[in-house]
Image (cartoon, rainbow, N blue to C red):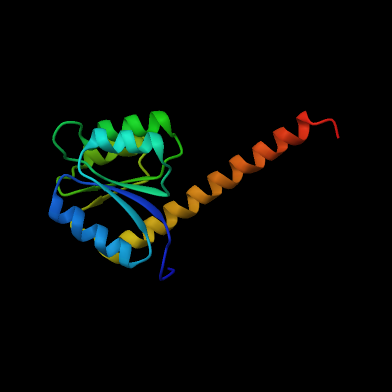
Length: 146
């Protein structure tokens, strides 16, 4: 695993102490973290910005993690989302994966394991972006009368 990931991460969690602590640790590893405390706010931000990975709490007041996941995936089906929860159940994990979550991790997470998952998600996101760029170039090449 690389020392500095340089990933763009949105961290969504309603527990402010956890949000602050994990944001700080991720930033120390070179990541650009956007901390968010509510599901609807996460959806709104995801409509405006692209992230390499979204770390999403499952149990939140208002719009919960599953609904937030669903709404983000409607806008960006290729979004890499890792569910982090202290209230995990097998049923919730299965549902999150069905909705398109990349992974499901229970709190407290081992930081090194989380970094590894972030790196994997970032690599997948890069491949998606490269594929989209290639397709766009091919479309441009086909429409021009060279």
